Length: 206
Image 1 (cartoon, rainbow, N blue to C red):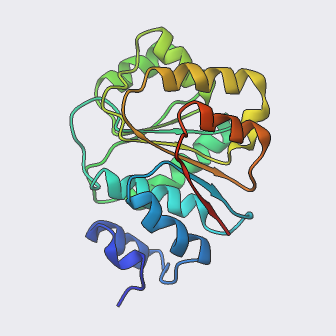
Image 2 (cartoon, rainbow, N blue to C red):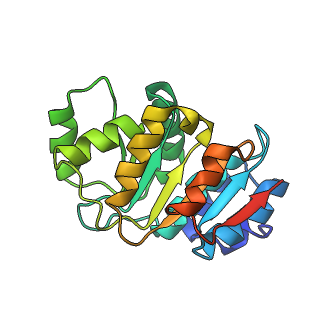
């Protein structure tokens, strides 16, 4: 019997957790997963190795019901740099095995026109830096009308002005969507987001 909050996840995710020998949720996952699943905007703060990445993946895939739908991305995950994008992409793939859901890496080392044409063929989750996502939007290579959940991984990098500016431009193109921000601690830059797209956001802190 899987413990809460894992037992209320999509059957595919429960199967994947078992195959990865992840049976016990961390204190952070116990607190954060139900709140994220409720659909609220959430600031998630916890120390390194507290299970933030696994929470991000589980709640995203659960929201998308672990299956492909349409061609436009239904989730965007912003990361600090290309190395982290690759790492997170590879971790996502462990959970999407034997499912139809399509995770796409917006690799900075590829030509932007290649990214555009591959995204156009259909993806469900886009993982990339703010710079790449913003560039795709400017070139009309990204349709954000279907985005349901927008995650920012380890958001301390937003203290960088160019990343923050890119984030502001990206979020203005998104109508109605859930935003979840993960970081080790709250900082003034993240607090500023409350007056943009994180109003009434819940805070989960461990």
